[in-house]
Image (cartoon, rainbow, N blue to C red):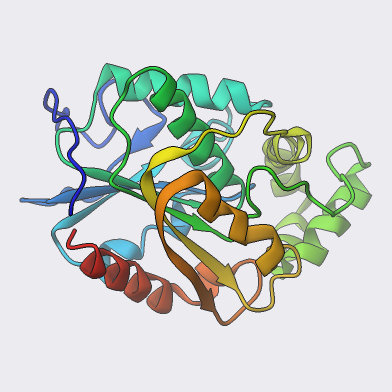
Length: 266
């Protein structure tokens, strides 16, 4: 049975949602039935999700979370704490609530941000998403096993990023570009590495867990507890690739999203 959610005032027609720069809809659908809000990984942006506008059917409208310090907001100071992100996102949702049923998809850091936002919504009586896709992320109650890197020197920080993602190494090899990107990258990793989920809140919506088969951190032991904090789940869905399977296997990810939504009659 499909959960019931409140429908509120109309969204503005411009690409930014309401007056907030935090969320935008690059491609407006004529008659969307559901809106999928996408939360990027640390250092990521909307480029990961742009192809989904072609890969997902027309009744799904893609909304993208755009944090300061990246993309078109590159020159703005980045957030440095989870609470700061959550407060600003919640304010944006309160200002312009969705007019149609909606879902969240968060990858890595984005999954933890989305969870904390849902907890904040629950605590303030705001309607929760129909469904949540927790992608490439350890569960909130699990601690990261990797050593912190956000306080390393620029040289060591760049080297550590390159070890995680080879495309980062290529981009940051450009000194001028690196100087622009490093502040927001450090801010993201500070959030990831200092985040602690002190109180677990069980949420009244469903979850699907997506994971890469070669992701060394998001192991079954680290990701399966996601199921314990939602009212129902569709299991763990595995993909070829490492932590960044969301970029390397876009077609498979989008197909799995549709399979999940079809199984839930969304």
